[in-house]
Structures are given as structure tokens and as C-alpha cells.
Image 1 (cartoon, one colour):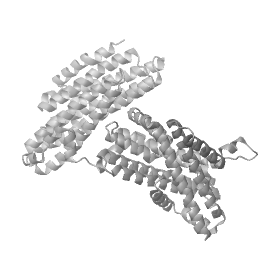
Image 2 (tube, helix red, strand yellow):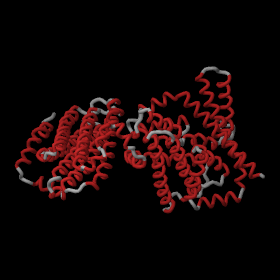
Image 3 (cartoon, rainbow, N blue to C red):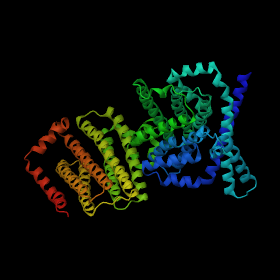
Length: 599
């Protein structure tokens, strides 16, 4: 009978906790809904700002699921793209830990009549309820009503927490409960599974962590029991997100749910490996079997989510690609969005040369978009423009979509190709589109660096601006030659690309050395120097991709080149071919000499 009463009290406390969270979240969203939408839409061009935005919004509305639902709505409205949504998802995982940090107020020691007594939940809860009911019932202003709802929710949340704490208090003297905890401590994977399943049932990671914090008041919960359950709780909240994102929503909305699952799964696996290693090597031996309180639980959840978010932040592009692999665009959807894809008609596969011709035109189109995007992104260093940034990411999404469709089309086409000439063309296209996609990626890299430069108010020196202008012209020229060589399948033009690429390499090396000298002389700041160096690196890589495309074009009709690019390049660089040397010398005079003469 006592067990039944305890379960009823525990579930009643949980019900109050969940209801309090809902009321508080509704009050916060009603009071700041439009502001939150504007913040999400404007502060997510940069992945770091997206992470921070997701963290703050979730901390405010007290629900990672609500943040992701809001994000999905903005995706459907065209305000956010998938890349922006990923950074918000990473931030939402951090923001959801704020609830646990608030709950740790249970651990405040208010002995001796300290003023801290007012911050204990059993004092704070009724104070919040009093404030809330006054605002709701006696003050008629809409803003006061929202404040009252927030205060009421806060009070009810803590009353539910106190109810759960009182309900589980008898467990501190229960040998059966102690034995059960010991069983879980020896099986961390079971702890993860338990946290996952219970979170799916309760539909709230914050509530599950709150239950753990309430159970910690028994004084018998150990760290080696708690940390796997917290990891499982983080996995469980993904299921809710995935369900929300999959109901009547777009492909990108579904991909957002996939990103959340992949992110939390990778984070859990990596953290579990690290924790197992630390325990086996004897790191902090007193930690693992030590009794935890609500503060330790809150801190571990925060550290776990913060570390995994920071560790995976550089891989947002990879997370997007994984999500796109799980949720593919329907052919009809892609064609509706980009009519150019209609040219990749499966009926043309019966005549492979026609199919290859259309695929080649699309590859050239991709290269033209990439060139324009590189040009657009380099302008960001002069004056950063959010509208231009939106165009950059829209163009990048278009290139990615073209790449995926062309890839699938060429793979399907391969079984129809019979003659050697078509096979060479097919092989050349399969390789070229990957390099074009990488060039498109560099445009977003430039934009991120330009955004960082603008946000930190970094200024390039006058000489650095002049240097960038010259090398930017060289990049524009090598892109123009590459597109022309692809369009006309012209070997003569393709051969003109490598001499220019070598000159660009020399320019990058010279500019890096000169910039290092400026850093040593104090002419340039460290932040400006780091950004400048990264810009040069991506410019060099852009030229490298153009060189690769040129080699694929030349290799289409030359077995020696196609079978060993590296050997051909070595022989080319060491050769005394007069046409090659003359082209290289012309490019040196056009670009390298002017840079050397800059002052």
C-alpha cells in the first residue's frame, strides 16, 4: 500500500512539474514570440551565432522541442535554411540544461536564518505563485498577464518538484531500491536505455532530469548510475523532436529531426567511450561511486551537452549531408524548385550521348553558379551584407541539389553506356562535379570568415586589401578559364589553367610570408592575421579544384594523364615546354609582379 501511495505522489508531482513547465513556456513564448522569430531569422548566418541563439532561445522558453518546432516553422516559411537550423539544434541541447540548473536551488544551505532561505524551492514556489495570481487576476494589462503566467508556471513547477522529492524520500531507507541502483550501476548501457525509454514516455528531458534530481535527495544515487541515464535522456528527447518534425512538414524539417538524432547519438557514443576510458584509468576515483546531489546532475548534463555541441559544431556541413542522405529530395520536388534539373530526363538514357550532353550542360551551370558565388562571397570582406549572405547560402543549396541529382543520374546512366568515348565523358563528369561542389563550399567558408571579421570589427590593412584585390582577380580568371574549357571541351584552354594555378600558389606563399612579417612588426592584429591567412588558404584551394578539373578534361582523351595525374603534373612542372613556360611567365607578369610591387 505504501508503494502505491508513493507512486501516486510521485506521478502527481510529475504532473504538476510538467504543467508548470507548459504554463511558464507559454507565458514566455506569448511575451516574446515575435522577438524570438526575428532573432532566429537574423542571427543564424554564422554557425557559432546560430549555436548561441539556439541556446538562449531554449533557455528562455525552457523547451528544446519548442525551439526546434519554431525552427521548423521558420524553415517552412523560407526564413531559415537547413544549415542554419543545424546550429540552432546544437544550441537547443545546451539551452535545455538551464532547467536543471534552476532546480539545483534545492541544494541551497539556508541554515542559520540566511537570506538564501528565500531562494529555497519551498519558499520561492509560494512567492512565485502569489506574484503570479496577483498579475493574472488583479492586473489587467496583457504584459502583466504574461508575467503572471511565467510566475505561476515557475511556482507550480517547483511545487511539483517538492512533491516528487517528498514522494521518494522513503526510498533512502529501502534496501530493495539500493539493490536496484547497484544493478544499474554495473550496466551503463541499461542506464542509457532506461533514460531513453522514460523520456519518450514522459516527453520531456527537463522533467526526467528533474526526477533524477528529486531522487538524488535520497542520498543513495551515485555518479556511475546517473551519468548513463542522463545520456539516455538526451537520446530520448530526439524521438519527440523527430515525431514533431515528421508530421506534415517539409523535407528540410524532417532532416532537422534527423540531425538532432544523429548529433545526440554521436555525442552519446563519444562521451560514453571517454567516460569508460577515464574510469578504467582511475581518473578521479572518488567521483564514480560518490553520492550525487541535484547540482552534480545539473553540471554533468550541462558539460555533456556543451562539450558535444562544441566538438560537433565544425561538422555542421557533414550533419546536413547525413540528414540529406536519410531524407532525399523527391525528383519532382527538386525539379519544381530548380527547373534546370528537368533536363536530366531518364528517357534520354536510351541515347547516352544525349544524356551526357545534358549532364555536361548542368555541370557547366553549376560551375557558373559557383564562380558567381565566389565573387559574391569575396565582396563580403569589403562590406558585409546579410542579404548577400542569404543569396550565397541559397546558391550553395542549389549547387548541392544539382550535385546530388547529377550524381544519381550519372550512376543510373552508367549501365546504359557501352562505347569508350561515352565512358570517358561519363568518368570526367563524375569527377568534375565533386570539384565544382567543393568550390561552392569555399564560398560559404569565405562568407563565414567575412562574418567573423565584421562581428569582431577586424580591419585589414591597406596593403592587405590591395593584395586581396590582385589575387581575387587571378581566382576569377582561373574560374573563367575552367568554365570555358568545360563548355567547349577545349584542351588548349584547359592547358592554360595549370600555369595560372602555379602562379596563384606562388602568390599565396608570398602573401602569407609578407603577412607574417606584418604580424611580427605589429602592423596587423592577430585576429586580422588569422582571418587573412584562412582566406588565402581557401583561395589556393579554389585554384587547386580548377586545376583538378583541367586534368580531368585533358585526361578524357589521354590515357597517360587519366591514369596518373600526379606523374603528369610532376613532368609538366619540370618540363621545358615553351608554350607552358610562356603562359606561366605571362601570368607572373600579370599577377605576381604587381603584388611584389605593392606598397
